[in-house]
Amino acid sequence: MNLPGQAHAPSWYADSVPASPLRTPLRGDHATDVCVLGAGYTGLSAALSLAERGYRVTILEAHRVGWGASGRNGGQAIVGYGCEVDTLERLVGHADARRLFDFSRDGMALLRHRLQHYAIDCDWRDGHASVPISLRQEKTLRQGLLTLAERYDYPLQWWDQVALRTQLDSPRYRGAMFDAASGHLHPLAYAQGLARAAEGLGVVIHEASPVVELVRGTRPQLRTAQGTVSAGQVVIAGNAWLQGIAPELESRIMPVGTYIGASEVLGAARARSLIRNDMAVADVSWALDYFKLSADHRLLFGGRASYSALPPPGLRGVMTRRMHQVFPQLADVRMDQVWGGYVDITRNRAPHWGRLTPNVYFAQGFSGHGVAATGLAGAIIAEAIAGQNERLDVFERIPHGRFPGGKLLRMPLLVAAMSWYKLRDVVG
Ligand SMILES: Cc1cc2nc3c(=O)[nH]c(=O)nc-3n(C[C@H](O)[C@H](O)[C@H](O)COP(=O)(O)OP(=O)(O)OC[C@H]3O[C@@H](n4cnc5c(N)ncnc54)[C@H](O)[C@@H]3O)c2cc1C
Image 1 (tube, rainbow, N blue to C red):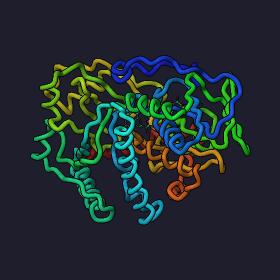
Image 2 (image 1 turned 90 degrees about the vertical axis):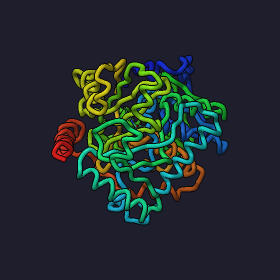
Image 3 (image 1 turned 120 degrees about the vertical axis):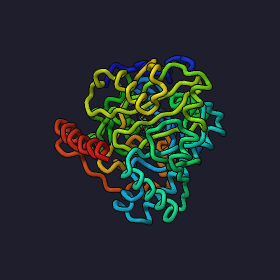
Image 4 (image 1 turned 45 degrees about the vertical axis):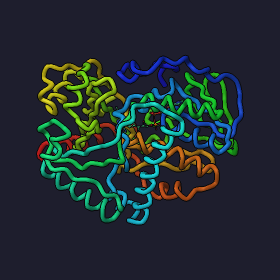
């Protein structure tokens, strides 16, 4: 684990929320009902749901609330998971795939409910478009739209290129699958809002408190360098940063770097001319571009997957070129800032949630699709801890393979697989 208590990665997000004082690091030995590792959306959501049910909860966070993916992401809150429903059907059959999809709709409703109920101000905007670049992508999207309408009772709109251009001023896309129920938000403000809501219900959050060991047993314990918390149940919500705490979880995910740039301020009129209805947009390539407007009228533009622990060279130039490819009319516009983080992908890109032992729960493997699903994961873990396992049981039926080859080989194998997908995107 890196030095504890690191500030948030420099980003437009970190610059656009008020600075908050460091919460007290853990010192000494403590006992509680549930101890949570990680103050990203997953851990915060579990803690909030547990506190709503009357549990005493302590969260141990290595750095700051929202320091990980939850404070850096594209902010696109989308119904569904990192894999399509046909992958879920192949893995668990139609009946369970249908349940899982319906749960994800519950997750979106939960997110909207929390924003309202806890007055979390995070610039929420309705609407999300998935946009194809190639004919093959268009056919796949249209087929997906049919499947969702006919087999999942989830009707979405199809916009042809002309209809799309009335909302999105880019020549790059052939049309759009538009989902009015999904949307976008300010990721770090959302994480901080969840933390405030949880603390309002008595949850204790220790920042700068990296967990160095999970001690399993009838009363599991999380240990930091300066203290311990023993609890009836533990929740592991550390995403791609666990580093040896639970090797059987870590071998089932691969950290993949993805990056975002914030353009300089465009002004209200120019920003709105790009995305008139203020929706979030993502293409459907493997190394996808995704973008939205910020409340202060910038374009926040994400993309460029990387399978190395190091940031790609010339990142700002790469992100700027990608932005210009989508919006040639921004040729004079530069990126003010670029930043990145890791997504935790599973081999099948389906979510990996469940129980490590009867009293140690986890949720990981959001595969770049966690803004809405993490809230659901936390709520489902909380209800399982309270004795209602039905929804978690469905997730536990999803089979997950390890990435072959252990830590050293995982990366080269993934790079080879990803190169294939990228090539497929290029040849259409
Ligand atoms: C650049 C980027 C763009 C993305 N864009 C989108 C998007 O537009 N839409 C979408 O749906 N998803 C997106 N995602 C994915 C989404 O952000 C994640 O799925 C989600 O935030 C995961 O939340 P989490 O709580 O599981 O993990 P995190 O937010 O990473 O939180 C894990 C926390 O655990 C802490 N931790 C880890 N180990 C320890 C330890 N040993 N002790 C104590 N604390 C520990 C970390 O410090 C961290 O704060 C994106 C991700 C990235 C990186």
